[in-house]
Length: 394
Image (tube, rainbow, N blue to C red; front, side, top):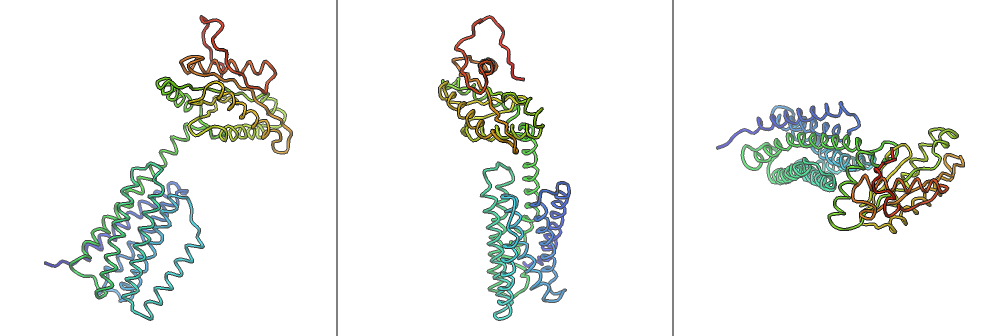
């Protein structure tokens, strides 16, 4: 039994158009998401190219047998561009334009000196390779946990396989739309692809936006360090794990010396630069498993799992020395900013986060009382066990 698949091709073109419109609306809502724009161009272009293929026998032959496949080939190149922008943020446009221009020239020569049939087969095969490359781009970005990533990779792989089969069909038969055989399966796979790609790309873009918003709610915008809420939540988890495993964990409380005087004398823009310098210094000193947070205006805390008091004191001194060197001159002004720090360790200085922070805070103010620009360890035990524990960090 035979059937005409032109209806399936038209359905595929309509679905491609609709998917492109959805992605175009997503880009219009947030015009920084260029991956959505280029994938919308791909979907709409596929709709045009597939519609031209479906017009075989109605439109001139050059429309359905030359222009339609060429547009679909260009869509393959743009699919790779969109995937690379999604994963890496940008592409080199001159390289892409040169590659596409050379590719079109090669296909034109193939059509002129060999046959249009072989040129179409070659173009479809190369397009399949581009969809494979797009799938590889999404795979390379798998470190970013997005639920739509693997379905998108599977769809791209299916489309690439279907195009390879189509290339074989073009190379071994006449340039027509067969009524039976692989072409029916190829068009069905293409229909699934154009609909699913728009769905899963939109899903990944929405997931990425939600992750971005959640991260922004937990990060201090000026320094890029964790804010108070994020630090306390993560530090409590680290402390619980360390106490459960029986390993030490240390906390460093830091306050920039005479920071108000810096703001008053040089302006808040210089003060903000000083804060960013400190954030850069502490981020370079800490290991990946350690974390720093901005608790107040010029008050910071760092937590160091696996560090005893001596190791934590060494880290605090490296932070102090690095900040003193980097903040000596800021924006052409001689600032000579310094810091005072206090270090406390669990379980030596307590078993609760509030207690350890209070002990480190107490040591930090002791460093200020002794002349600033120094690091002090917390006292082993409070002098008055009955006194209330007060956290002085704002």
